[in-house]
Length: 86
Image 1: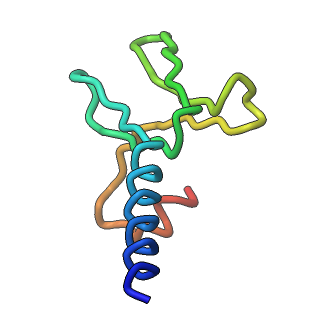
Image 2: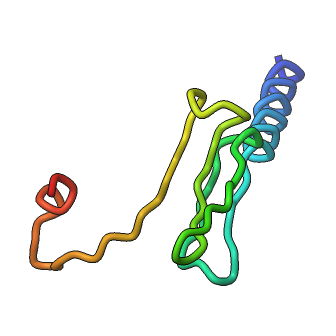
């Protein structure tokens, strides 16, 4: 019985290491955020208009997942629900 418990604990520890090893954090010195990407398939795409932006795509196809972050300045007196809908 004790051997089974040790094996189960060992398997749980190994699975935890595997799960955390599959994520990665995107950050750069000149941006104000760090983004925890859920898998290694996500990649950052640099887009330049007035200044450099980063967009994120899962794999090579936008239909698998595409993320664009925007910074929106708002009045802090508004409720969060009002900020997200307007």
